[in-house]
Amino acid sequence: MPTAFAISERVPSFRFEFLAAQWRHQDMGLYCECSTTGCIEMIFVPADEYERVREQEGWFLIMPGHVVAESERVVSKHGGYEIVAAARTGRARFQGSADEAV
Image 1 (tube, rainbow, N blue to C red):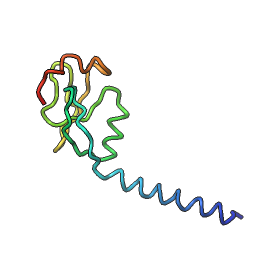
Image 2: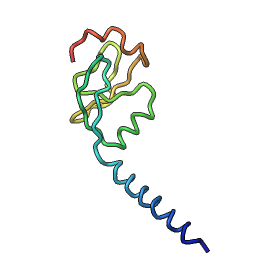
Image 3: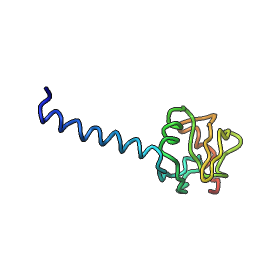
């Protein structure tokens, strides 16, 4: 039979799992991940969509209109954000974009 301590440890864990499931459908405020240096535009993305994008190497969440057509491909468009796949990642993605306007 579990001890009172063991039972009390399970309750917070269960609560956390319940809350985490609820939060997955809430929007998160994030900075645009476009390649323009210094962009501080905010986008709002559902947490589960954010997780999906993070699972894909080279995918980024950006403000609509911030795509660099020469080096990025729009994967999908949503109301207040777009998902792009970048041909280059890391520091190489930002080369040549420092002078671009937001």
